[in-house]
Image (cartoon, rainbow, N blue to C red; front, top):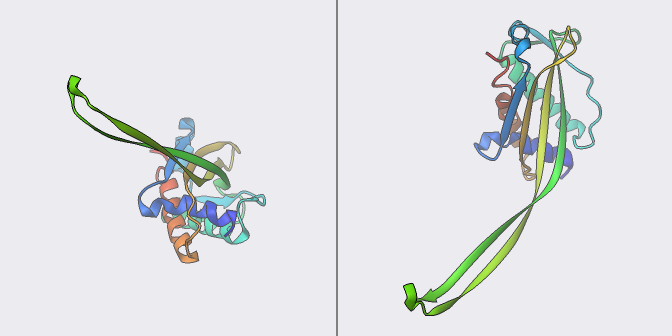
Length: 178
């Protein structure tokens, strides 16, 4: 379909249990401030070439739901922290080589045989979603979560939203840090 759906699907695959790599990083000195966060607002999101308006709304909906499940309240402006994201895609190729050996004999009585090798290329798209949380007072990034996965473009809108919701929960699992 389009690149935005692909990015959405890549991040959302976490509901399937595998294939999604999620990494988080944060500023340890900002942990006390993060523990006190109660409100958030969205930073201005630039139009991203990889995300359609439909998918941008799905991503925002998923992140809102994950934050609100943690007790955070969304405000139009001036939240304790701001949220922003960026999505990217990259074409990848993996190679798999299999060797088949056919022969007989053993040890020094080895009689001979033949071997064949076959290399297969697998082309796929890797989607990446980066979620940043910026402190509302200091305007410094305090938390980042990155999700990477193979893109599945054959999902229905409902499957995309469901999987993205699960992905957002995983991305914010360690927020705020303990």
